[in-house]
Length: 281
Figure 1 (tube, rainbow, N blue to C red):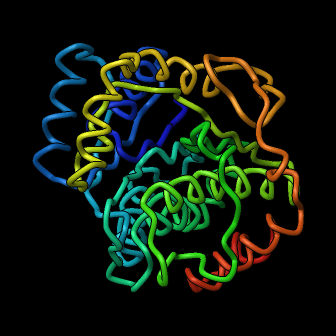
Figure 2: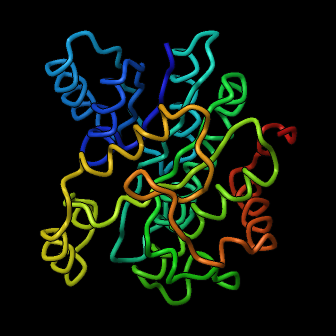
């Protein structure tokens, strides 16, 4: 049985992706920040599909120490098996400048570094299975550039600019992975505008109000969940990098900047204190 790991799996897109993927007969290991919400999500999945093979691991992925703990727990659940797909869906928005336990700006750390570090830890199992990595992106990456002189916006924080840059990071990371090796295929999914609470969880003021109004025009989370299920099940691995509604779509020309992609990859290794894949992709 193929195993899929999904971060941010207790609600919204992640939960609906877990439902769609377990319905395909795959095993799901979900990751969530709250033990209570993990248990609720697991019960909800099993209530709809009693035969589903599903486990949950609890951890705050904004902390690198907890990313390592989550990776250890996943590896324990996998045993000797390979990992078919890692879906890095956990993410967030912060309307004020916030740092993680590691001292990094929250959106950069949670939306990019957490997925980078977890992919590094699970890389041998992904490679063993000839698997796939799927990152949750956003069309907003098209309105971003890398702010190399102040990548964490310490001097002049902008919630939207930090978020957009983190989504560009997802694209550059996936593109660089595909450039460096061919054993594991990396994708980014653009869910589009979705009616979830991502913009309300850790925000206030105008950001909170704006998202409450904007999300009303969004689709239900089960709509983008189908794209994740498509990329998990399609054989052979689909071509392309960036997907929306189960189709490969155009992305920003900045993603093709190999120098930016290489620079981000090496900076991420430095900030996470690792050599991705042990330096052997």
